[in-house]
Image 1 (tube, rainbow, N blue to C red):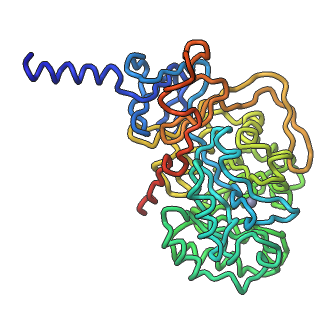
Image 2 (cartoon, rainbow, N blue to C red; image 1 turned 180 degrees about the vertical axis):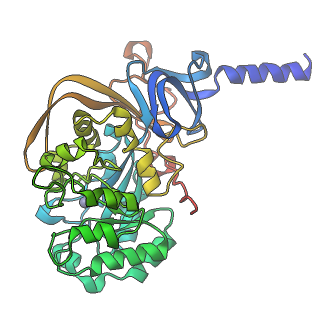
Length: 432
Ligand SMILES: [Zn+2]
């Protein structure tokens, strides 16, 4: 046989099985690329290799039917607490961080951003014990307080809020630290906010604000209209103390002004920061969040918040279209942290994928104050793919039938492949 025809045979054979994983028939919602249609999605070497109406099944080494389900970019939770372990933070009320793989992947979340659990004194320990060990991709908002959220005394210690030192650490860890967090301050002054913004300016990264105790000496309006820069984030958007509705239930115009300035509003549901009495009227009037996030910790996970999909379902039932809910849990969040390689399904992108279902029926949702809202639809995660690997498979869609396997040996790879951080590329920040 002639050499060129040999090569032709080889390449034809390769084309036969050119994808590691082929997800067929799912309804793709990829807001960045404006795709909202049934598409097949092919993955090779941990990246999206093709998105097309009909990719032949013969081209996939593993072919999974996901018809009837939505296929979206892996979800990004912009506000989480994952500094788990003995040295991790003790939030107010005794709630603590949770190891990310314990909750994220099973709800379609492939990337979490820890919101200030660590500060410059314990960031490296956090990185070593959690960030580098998790299969979930973990980015960090570094707390402006030196010791993060390790206790009330540390969180109120303004003397240990060092903008220059925080910025230097952030610049030394650009692959992990994506922003600065200011949180839980109860004093009457602006120093924590100002030092957070100073650190963010020095390191050229955004600042996320939890405004702590709302006080007349430092009005919230001034925070979002003057103190924050475009691209900075106010989290806990529907927290009860936020001045949101006037006596007639109308959203105050200053909130739209703040948004026009470029200040971003994140949900940060948490254990005490999401109130239907704020959110339902505000969403109806168009004051919707830029990003949907959990503020997950051991308290919120077991009360009204539950998980990312439950928070997203609340917005779905408040009337937000599914595509907008997905946008606020993927591409918008990626842009906030300037990781524009994430949050979409462009060919060549890291293959982080959530395959979601929407169950129809009678459901109810609970806010941080125990108030209930009824609903008719609820999201669930059927399959999660992180960097091209299946990390969550609710109904064994990717697995072979037990009575067709013969002896349970030589399956090629163990079902639970514990390769952890190795399977999780950390994209570099977008240059700006
Ligand atoms: Zn938080």
